[in-house]
Length: 150
Image 1 (tube, rainbow, N blue to C red):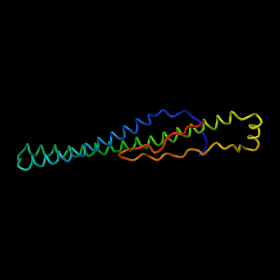
Image 2 (tube, rainbow, N blue to C red):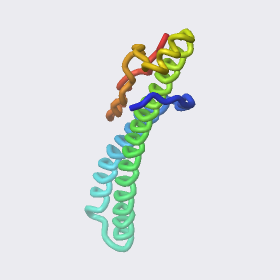
Image 3 (cartoon, rainbow, N blue to C red):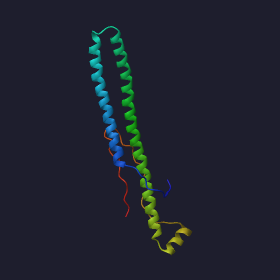
Image 4 (cartoon, helix red, strand yellow):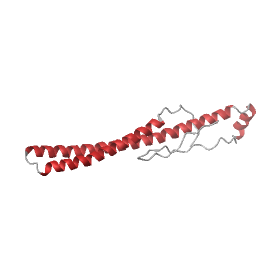
């Protein structure tokens, strides 16, 4: 993992995790209401017969497939947001570290810079930031914070 400079990451870190939590909660609500709707449909169909009962049964079956897909998609989107958060945090931490190293190098004397060029730098810039773990559902709690260098 080499030091590299770059543009600071433009990403709503807090907002992404909040949206992930909300998506996960909405998926839970869809699943909860699915159970209630299924129970109500079973009650309705218990004594209902004929063409309209058949049409209703078809609608219920289609709805069950749709809401299952919807809740799965919302959960997948929430997980994707958490993964993007982790990647963006890692990249921003690396950019900040590169800025920190560049700043320290620029403040070294001319003679130290010549020495660094010839012999290599022995300056301790601190550890490079590692990757951030992906926040996990349902809380999607941040797994770290961005480094601040002085």
